[in-house]
Image (tube, rainbow, N blue to C red; front, side):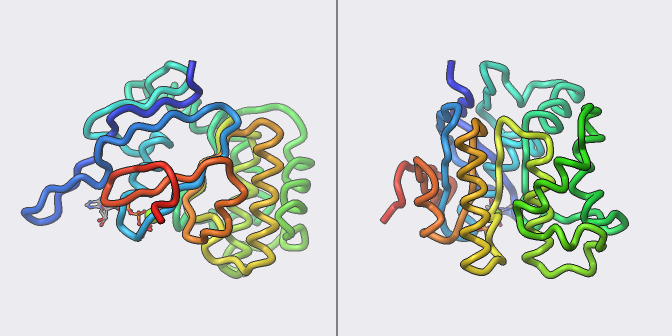
Length: 225
Ligand SMILES: Nc1ncnc2c1ncn2[C@@H]1O[C@H](COP(=O)(O)OP(=O)(O)OP(=O)(O)O)[C@@H](O)[C@H]1O
Ligand SMILES: [Mg+2]
């Protein structure tokens, strides 16, 4: 059975009088252990696609099966379980909780999924991996955009997700930090997490095993070049 199977997935939006497909009959089969990069121009439908896979937005038609179970028809409790314990999602422009410290922001998913174990130990480990241990006691408003992004990456990895979905996770990072983050994703992928990222930087694509291009809602194999 395919790990994640997307069939004829569409999302229709309406703007003024105009109705259009932001995602247009997308088919995609993802194997466990894949590291997939999606590229494509602004407005081509990448975030719309990821939001549906993350169970945050309902498709107009089509389905998304995770190990055979259709996530679009899951009840609230099941879909929360999927989001809290199997998925690590970093939405585009995601925000940290401003009244929690960096450390508590990272630890948060652990408590939301009522896991037992060393949450503090793992949070410290992840903050070290993304290179911002020294910022643990600070609040989000005291961080730069790139530092904040690394907090969100650490938070998404807190529950050792089966699948990590990240929407332009390195958009506001410098070359060095981007490389560090991509290497971290690569290690996580090698330890068994399936990775799906949207990226604008073509040189981050080499970290994955597969690249897809989104264009006007259509998804095709390759870089489209
Ligand atoms: N809620 C909405 N209602 C109407 N149109 C929307 C909505 N959300 C997105 N769109 C439109 O759907 C299209 C796809 O948007 P989407 O955010 O998926 O693009 P994207 O590929 O992620 O772009 P970017 O690279 O700029 O992040 C765009 O034309 C956008 O304006
Ligand atoms: Mg987007």
